[in-house]
Image 1 (cartoon, rainbow, N blue to C red):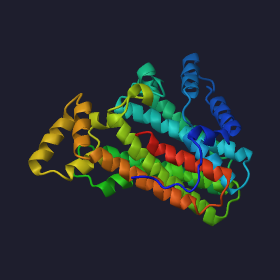
Image 2 (image 1 turned 45 degrees about the vertical axis):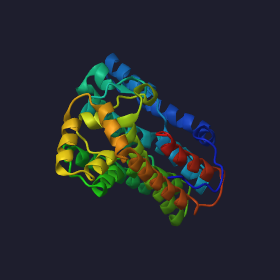
Image 3 (image 1 turned 90 degrees about the vertical axis):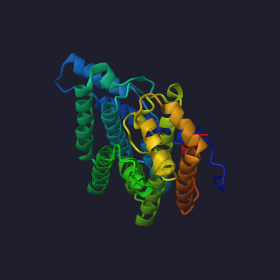
Image 4 (image 1 turned 120 degrees about the vertical axis):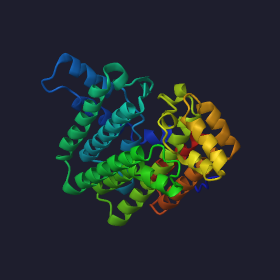
Length: 330
C-alpha cells in the first residue's frame, strides 16, 4: 500500500529539529527527577542508569508538536512531556521483566543488570513520580494522562491473559494495541493541544491522529519483533513469539489455514528459537505484507485526519513522524 502525500514534510530528524530545544528540556527535567531521596548509593546508581539510557522521545515529541500546532509551548508542556516519557519508560521496565528482555535502547536492561525485583520497583517509582509531577498540571491534562495510563495497564493485562490464545481475532488484537500503546500516543497529542489552549475540535483531531499513529506504531513494532535486527532495533527481539503472544501477522496466517496446518504452525510458534523459520512461513503466506499494509492504512487514516489541521511547520513535522513509523519495516 502506498501512502498518498500532499506536501513534502521532510524526515523525522527535520521534524524533531523544530522542537529540539524543548526536547532537551524534557530530557533534562526527566533526568533531574530520577534522583534518590535518601536511598543508598546503589539506588542512586540504578536511577541514574535509567535516566541516562535515553530513547527516541517520540511521545514527548508528539506532545510538543501538537502544542505548536495549537498555539505556543509553555513550561507545562515540558513537565507534561517528562510525565509521558516517565510513564512510557515504566512500561518498558515492566515489559522487560515480563518478556525477559536483555537489551533495551542498545544497552543491558535493568532486570539483566539488577534483577527483576529492582526493575519492577523502579518502574513503580517512575509511575508514582509521574503522578506526583501531574500535581503541577491543571485538572484536565492530569485526568487525560491518568485515564491513558489506566488504559495502557488494562491493555497489557489483556494481552498477557490472551497468551496461547490462537483464536484471537484481528479486532481483539487491535483493541489490545489501542489500549496498551495507541492510547498514550493519543493522550500525548491531546494534552499538548490542550495546554496550548487549542479548541476542543482541534484537540479531538490531534488525539485521533495520535490514536491511529499509535496503532500503526505497535503493528510495526510487532513486525520488527519477528523480522528485525537486534543491533539496529537496540532491544531484544522475538519476545512475542517466545512468550506465545498472537500478533497481527500470525493471526492473519492462522485465519487462512485448515486445522492440520494450524496445528503445525502452533507447534512451530511454541518451539524455542524458531523466529527465522516462522518469519519465512509468514512471508510466504503474505501475512507480513498484510500486517505492513494494515499499518499503512492506520497511518493513512492518521494523515487524513491531520489534513484537517491548519497547515503549519508543526503539522508537517507530525506528518513526517507518522510516515517514519511504517518506513521502519521497509
